[in-house]
Length: 342
Image 1 (cartoon, rainbow, N blue to C red):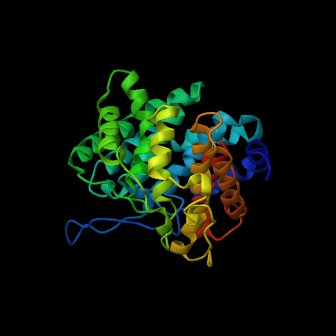
Image 2: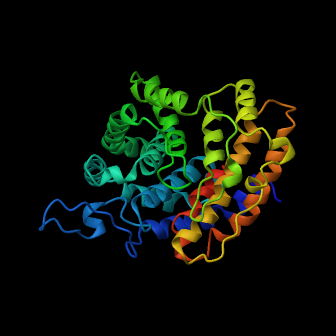
């Protein structure tokens, strides 16, 4: 298994190419629309979402924009900087982003809770970390969308009595983990409401979790591991020693590679089947989670080499499918590859 940095060097340019092609590809599209009357018919994707219309669905298009910003910030020597900046300048039009803010604040925008919401705030946060004149423009243009997402989270979290623990878009832990860095940055700027709401939800939902039944994974259309994305979320909130103790209670068999199910790569029998193809994402997101867990444990912890090996097993299974596979895979998987490699 090559080092993560070497894998990024080998693949960054091709990931950019896939992302740019996905962003501009309007069809096929998975369009969700709540009809409010007989004349409220679905419109063309570009009319509804003038920025995030491509890449099959809204959240996948958001992910592709994040991929470009992430590689622009972390690997600019490996990617076509000028083409990325030109693409994002075109996409991050202030008027078009105002329409995206209206969309996410409306009834159809709730369909993206919390997965698309979390990814969109990840995008906003990534742009804010870029130190360049174009990024300053993009951040300003993205603020109405960020405010709309902030309001949606604040409206939802106090009412969310229970978390969603399955391995697809509704997963609560993953969505909150994606949103938390932005929430912390907003808190540092003087508005702590979202950070407080997220940390409160995490504490009441996950703080006392024990003996996760991870051996039941995976389900047939998972692209997230319910167990591992929860553990990854807790790496963001707990100091190393406390995380080590929490993880021991939550997944007590890691040192012995138990349960076997979360150490073994998922089998993907048909990449052209959109639901089965999700399992490529499960392998990629597990690799990312295992890497994050290994890097978050205290030095000398016996679980570190086990987690590293599990990350490599799952990366080996997923990375060959990021570029050149069926569109059911290619319209989104590169985001998880970049999440893992950066």
